[in-house]
Image (tube, rainbow, N blue to C red; front, side, top):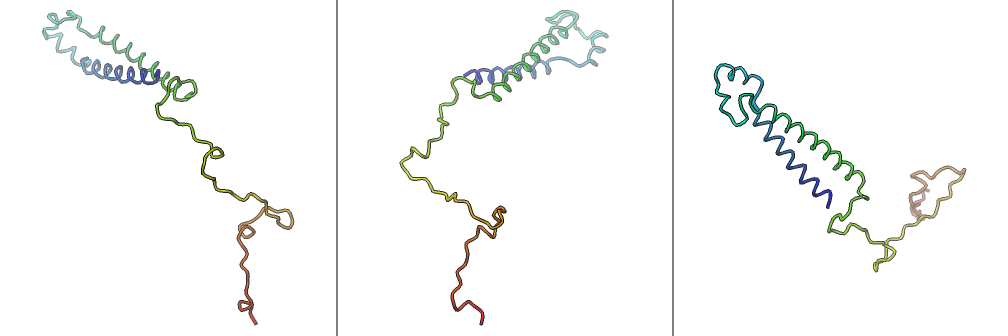
Length: 135
């Protein structure tokens, strides 16, 4: 639940940062305002909206990075997340299942000299018939 809320906040903050950056004007635009660009009639006054938009962008950037750290921490520690998914992720125990599980032979192979079994030692031995023996 908390993860979903933080993810929605992250998307909204990212869209807000994009919008604020696109609304701001570049440093080269100040030269046009100095020669009578009509900046005195704007909503933010003759100084322009640079200070307000810069502070708002900085605040959203700090919120974005703090939110990113929280999301990363939640992903790294999934056991601390409350709620979770509606899809069950618990794997059924094969010992309790109705169908029998495959049995694997784990008997060790005796090898002379105590060495680890090689690929040849684990292969089945082909039985020779009397017709296969060279004369």
